[in-house]
Image 1: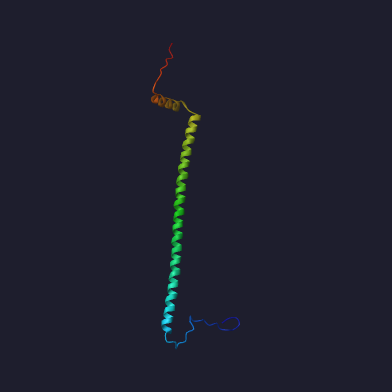
Image 2 (image 1 turned 90 degrees about the vertical axis):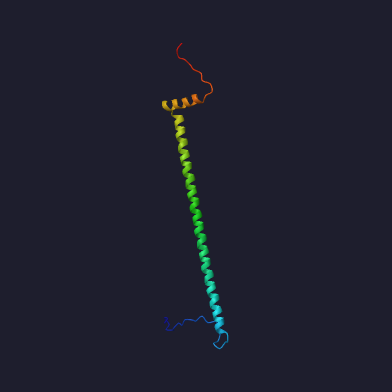
Length: 117
């Protein structure tokens, strides 16, 4: 009952065909099949949208992982550059001798100087 005291009645899903219509049962079955096929189409569309969303999400995750790897590699590379720049700015005796030996080994001609006169 509603507030005004009237009773609401549920409407049946009737196509307005009288019971005496000779092919009413076949028409109603066709209507039900059509209704079911529409529901299946809607479910299929939902599934396709969900799959597309999942694929898009997966692609976004892969892209962000790739960007993270690239960023991490850049950070490692920049840290190595910083170390080499610091090495050039503040060389200690050991690193200087190490570099000197590398240069001497790679030189084609070596000139020996004697500090004795």
